Image 1 (spheres, helix red, strand yellow):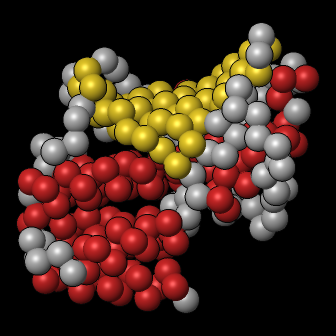
Image 2 (cartoon, helix red, strand yellow; image 1 turned 60 degrees about the vertical axis):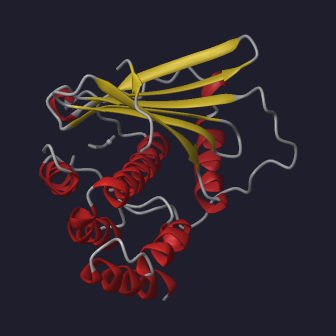
Image 3 (cartoon, rainbow, N blue to C red; image 1 turned 180 degrees about the vertical axis):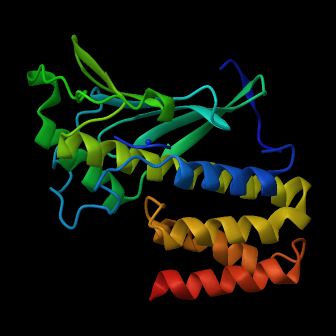
Length: 243
């Protein structure tokens, strides 16, 4: 079983079993979604830098104590390699997992950071309207001794809105992968519900990069530990993603 480390989306981002968790989380996301246009990944994005500066760090944090997934932190480098941490309501354990954005997702994220000119800017991204009840977000960047963190719960800045949307999708995908892994190891009977939750995210463009999940889905489709209905569902999802 994966180890749990003790400790602690312009957009939103239960209970003891993982199947219930997925549906409640998805329902909370839809129900509490902010009225923002940035729901689709950008059609184009700048390519990743040719020379990667490993000292540059990026971060995203989401917090809403009343949500089931009430705290999320993502930290990564210029190629999208890093960690994701998250906590669930009424649980004391913080989950810490490695994170690797796909090349496409990392390209989009880095393009948005570039358009923000974040370290050179002092822009206040918070709009006059507040939606703190839907969660507060922080985006941060560090390069050498330069460091900046911006906090907001709603913004009219398109690049900032698109950036937190990318992070929300990355978090949803990573949490889903984690829950599927736990279910396969300990509660295989929850796999059908998790496949339904994954399909829901896929239908509403809630995944960072669906193609990144193809190896996992292929593995599930032949895993005799999980129910046949889940294996068949995994095969259908593979076909949808490959279209």
